[in-house]
Amino acid sequence: MSARELDAAGITGTELRASYEACRRLNASHGKTYYLATLLLPAWKRPYVHALYGFARYADEIVDDLASTLTDAEKADWLVGWGEQFVKDVANGGSDHRISRAVVDTVSRWDVPMEYVEAFLASMRMDLTVTEYATYDDLMVYVYGSAAVIGLEMVPVLEPLVPREVADPYAADLGVAFQLSNFLRDVGEDLRRGRVYLPSEDLAAFGVTREHLAHGVVDGPVRRLLAFEVARTREIYRSAASGVRLLHPTSRPCIETALALYGGILDEIEKADYQVLGQRVSVSRRKRAAVALPGLARAVRARR
Image 1 (cartoon, rainbow, N blue to C red):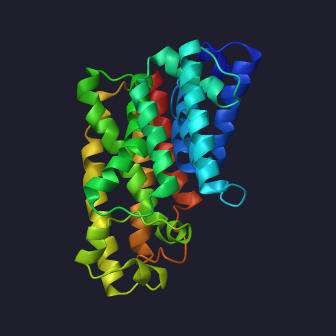
Image 2: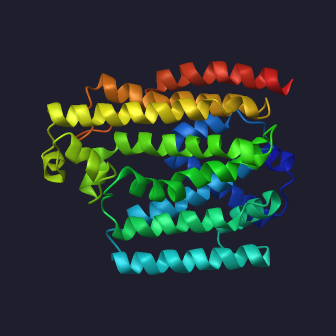
Image 3: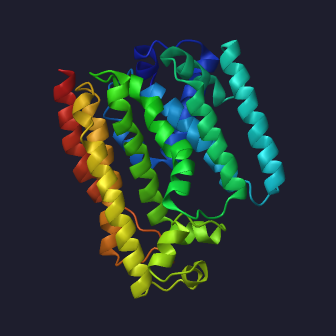
């Protein structure tokens, strides 16, 4: 993160600036699609978005990447302890943790409700014990905490032109659509980690079982199941897109670009004939550039 961005955001202090930079690096490494979109925001908004997204990425990577070194019980203890300390840090107005320090600052500056943070941590704990979801409503309980609240946390930074209660539902849909796209892209990868994020009721409706998916063969029933999930996710994208006009003009190019890039994941899944059990589809660099460059032009015009 450039000194210009931190200066523009009014972020001072060597340790605090270093923490914001750590969040930025985490996003650049693990959230390339959204990171690209955030570059279209005005300089002063970027550090805060990096902090909020970095908090989510850090917890998510801990849950997924420590599987080889910690038991689920040990990971749960770590996550609970880290979350409890974060809540205390917010109350105290500061943190010694290299990631939490910037997030505490952001949460305090923008008055982010702690209920969002608590919902997120609850979903992260679910990932340690829950391996499948019986119904779509059950899945949405998890997705609210893992994704919808991330969108809700971003709202004040994106400067809505309407009251929060008007903008919030669109922001929540945005987070949900992004998460569901990731689930569809990562069906095979998640399955190998012992999790299935496609509702069991949907699998049953199309004659698919967990064991069926584990075979790694995309046959007719699996293809129809995935086509159904893609179509349902596109409906949520359409709902989220309607809220872009409610944001400050300088925030719109970022969200429009993120919508196009994440929505592009669904396009790539279809182009790959739904082959997501043995490979991970992605939006090519050329296509990301083709989306981001017009967004950059819009961002420059909006700032002027």
